[in-house]
Length: 203
Length: 203
Image (cartoon, rainbow over all chains, first blue to last red; front, side, top):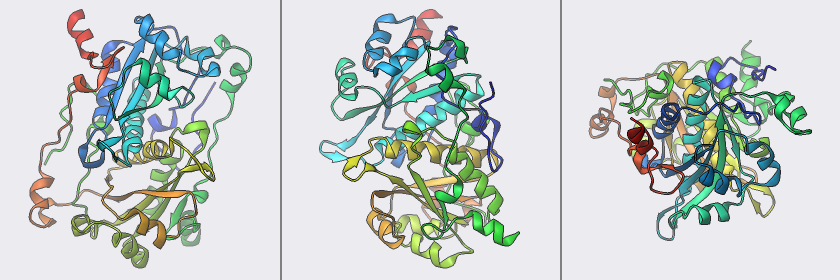
């Protein structure tokens, strides 16, 4: 099964091979490797270097915390996520000071998780991020401090066997990865003027 | 000048050497390289593969669009950004349908810009993201469609000479890069229980 992105322009191997599986190997993720993943998250950029991100890590070796986090996921996500070796709750400090929203709190957190995902890719690991969970419940059961918003839950692990997935999800695991063409979202100086046309006209 | 991150745990070279300079070389960025950067952004993850991101690219070769975007930046950012070869406006579709907010619109955009930054790092380029600009004005002058929010402006270019920067910014360019320690934001199953302690106790 090859899930490498079919790119229109060359990109680095780690970006090309990163994808979001549902089947993970049972093999645990070494704590040293996990720390490198979060170290990558640590060095991402953020507004005024505010670093609003926070993470609560649960693994199959911490079954109580793992079950608490798993219980916040939607049913369809639980079907496969229950077998992931690691589940992480990501949160962001959504207020700069009480009552004053930080408009980049989600943006900055997203960047840090992207760095983590790419470090995972470089380490032979894969990450699957989910928005399908009860954010309020997650904030409550993990007692997030005031101002922090639960944003995603993500699974980390080594690639697994799609055959291990339940019906329906097994087939989806084989789907070809798709994206909008660049012409729909990368513009040259004005909305809806594709940057790609510049290449075409110069060629 | 070495701006490589001083990491506590090993991370990949491209993540370690990525940083946000203010001094860029005058050398233009090849359009092919720009397309590879946005191709990297294209293949990042997003909620239900919604890909809410959009980008308006301006360069020194499109001076009218460049000046329009530069004019939305705060004064301190204009001081150095006026010499960057490329300035990009990033936007995100913040509503799934009219009146229904997408809570991950910023998060997903942040991921795509992180992918772009890391592809830049792999191509010898650097990216400097800014929140310090007039978001409403940018949305207006570039006529963003309803539902799209302007989120950041970022500069792209080859590394330049810090000596080219005005007083104040020149010194800042040399600053050692700093981040919070992992113990403050990566927790083991419960808030404020550092994952790093697991390594210490196992050692």
